[in-house]
Length: 451
Image (cartoon, rainbow, N blue to C red; front, side):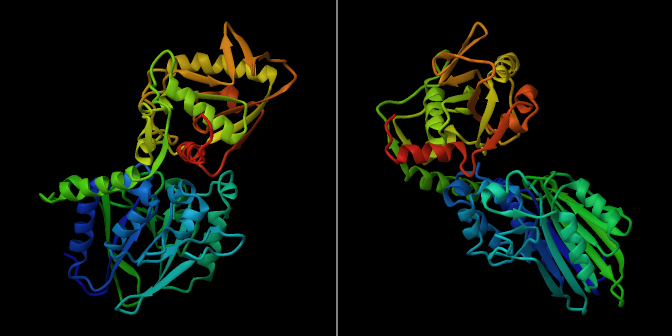
């Protein structure tokens, strides 16, 4: 048992991804582990918000903030799910009701600090030690500018902030991944503690590199982090204990299931109340016609002004009902996926189509995980605005000419995953920011466009 004198307790959570089924345990952990300590810091290290959960989707993350408020956080930083999973206008208001600051120094709004974030936070312990807290998020230079943000190099920003720091102790809230964190630990002399995230890594009993302590607590609330530090009177850390506590070691309570169910139920109710369209009829998504997939593909083509669309039937997870609500659409297109406009030559298009059908035939029954895909299996290749039979392509009804340019629209999963190397190496690709597939479909149908 650590003597309470000159002791700092730190509790941290990262990459919850709206897995609210673990929230009741997390809330109790934060409360119980704070008892008896004069100096407690509590942090969330980003990717708390994930629009796969109905409450997060219905409230655009504000439901998450209400739950985070109950953890009595000292501060939080953002992950890519907040930064890229929400449109700029949504992120600008996400933290309006937060009772904690967002610390973030490498994301700017037209060169200025966002109104909802601070570059650092300084706190003083009861025993007189000053602590500078910094926050950094993973840079996606191909995405953030198109979402309306400036993204800065995190290492350069951290170097400047540490050079300017006169605090006795420094903490980095890092949504940057373990490679960055371990390199930073080796690089900076006055970086004392890194609380990590993004790559879902777990340091069960912490890690120590060149005088820097590292802690990380996995993903989804499967672990919760606890750091206990004791200092001498010169504020040198003389004792440390770092633990990533497995949720299975934490007691459940009978009321937990009801709390978890209510969060989901409330989200579903909010989404069901928002009717997107009353269609002439519903659309099944079954072989060989895949009516629902073709219906969605046609909308995506029109909204993105691209004549030909390629996607996979597994993108459409459920049939489309005649009365379509946002709740239905969230179930049908649950993915955090946008479309990509690709401009390729005719000869490139021929090679791409051969690859898509060759690899797609293998992927058809594969369970797909990651890259924003939240469905089950890949499914069959779906074409809209073009046909492919016997190795022959008709684009808008006409044969493809080798040296002509063609535009195709595909899910961004094809750009980010390793499935289709020929496609990735061809032409030029433009991600269609900022809307997810389901947002594009909802906007089209709500406009009352003919379909």
